[in-house]
Image (cartoon, rainbow, N blue to C red; front, side):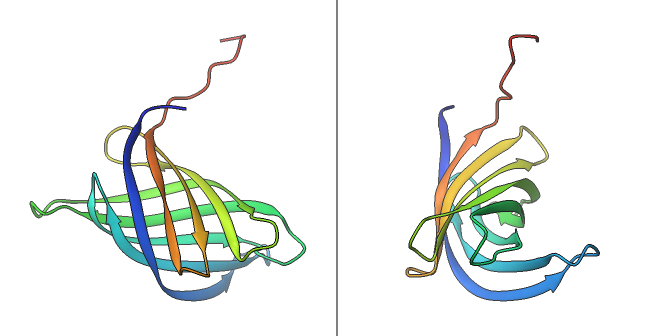
Length: 131
């Protein structure tokens, strides 16, 4: 795995629900906290079909990071979630599209601590033998 750029530690603020045009239930976990390299972060992790009989699925994360110098960025990431067996916790992994390089964000969202934390890496696509 690539070198760690920074860590993030977010606290759960609220949860909302919606449906997409295909009838999938979307669970929106809204969080606030800090990312070491970015500053104050507001983040929404959108889980597709987070049901008790589903172990993994599509995940979108959208949020803003606000730096101390007054600048800010908007990020959107797509990836997947995976259920942690026997717990109210989910592993998360998305690749964020930012104004600069892509960031791979890997973490865990936990209800027992009401947190979403993890590490951010510089995204480097995996090359296949055919490339």
